[in-house]
Length: 175
Image 1 (cartoon, rainbow, N blue to C red):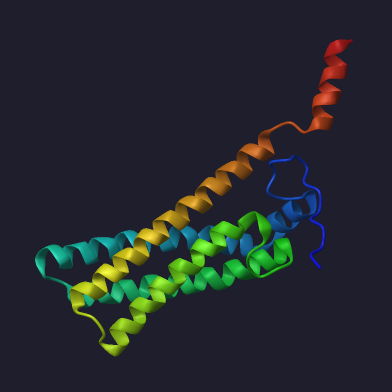
Image 2 (cartoon, rainbow, N blue to C red):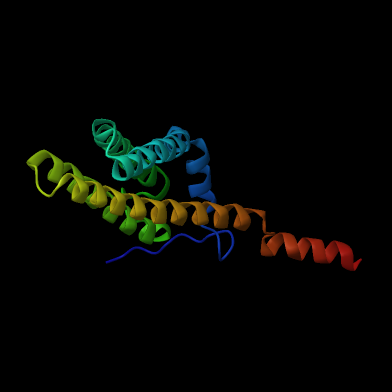
């Protein structure tokens, strides 16, 4: 039987007041804040190396190494993100407010893992392997956009006045 979700301070808020405190005091929030841009930097470098190989035929070893590094950073951010979600929301993954982001994260993880498998077992041609990596990267970009939009929504929601503050402000200006 599902338990009731705690009340949020505003209807569009991502966090209850208690969740916001847990988010703001958790070291895992800092870890995510460091790993997310690091992962994006690794992604940009790797994307360049993969596209360079596909365009010129040069640098295959660097391209493969960069995809493996990107995948390892992805695993790290997924594990630490699950811990963060447990600390803030009480469950490791699929907290209701991050359900769709976590669903797409699973696709991203599956595609990156599939890339490692095809390289390890020698399945597909090198070009097909790299196109699989590019598909994983496309899913990653969509997932990153989801999280950025969610963070922006959270920031905007936290800047909106609460019903109580509107009532107080109305009472003060009405006098």
